[in-house]
Amino acid sequence: MRTFKLLLGATLTLVSLMWSPGRAEQSGGDYPAAAKQDPGTDDAAMAQWKRRGQEPDWMAEELAKHKVLIPADNKGLVGKGQGSTYGSVTPEDVKVWQQETYKLAVEGSRIFHSGDRLKSTIAVSCDMCHPDGANTHPETYPKFQAQLGRVALLRDAINWCIENPVRGKKLAPDSPEMRALETYIYAQRTGTPLQYGKR
Ligand code: HEC
Image: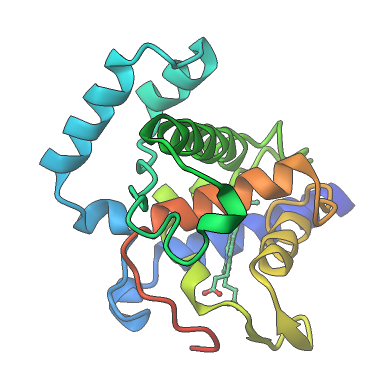
């Protein structure tokens, strides 16, 4: 009975999400940056990534199914006023940092798209309601979330969805899974300006 109620709840939420016309407009028409980014540039970066042959099998498999945006090349920021922190930074260093960051985003994509990895008791994954990370709005955190009754960080909103619509197991804020999910969600909004607190 309880399972039935949970299922019904999740189905209703799903249905209400899918059947609300103009939802995208209501949220300011902000689809994930994936849709906005120049696909040409993105594909070129992806091809370059693959040529380097640094991609483990699990990453190739995930990327064949889902697009994950490549981390920005922020080398212009590295070493400027922070030189003493990092010592001398080589282009090779920057590449390794980019690869490690991308790996975490792709790992996040695996979790985001898997009810099993989220330990969902009703076989629901995040993408069922947030395709490609849509409507997750990481750029608006921290902000007050009424359902939590306090200022929430992105990880709090993620855990809220894990516990409620997904009926999974809440993640420790510093767990590898939470770190990967956060990375994936931010990655999908590459290019969106930060506006913390926005409703
Ligand atoms: C059954 C549909 C459903 C599923 C599955 C779901 N969510 Fe959500 N999610 C929602 C709804 C509805 C909201 C809006 C809640 C609100 O703002 O009151 C939301 C809000 C969010 C937000 C905050 C968005 C904002 O504008 O502040 C984040 C982040 C988020 N979800 C992440 C996730 C993640 C990560 C998962 C997978 C663990 C997930 N969601 C699974 C329905 C879902």
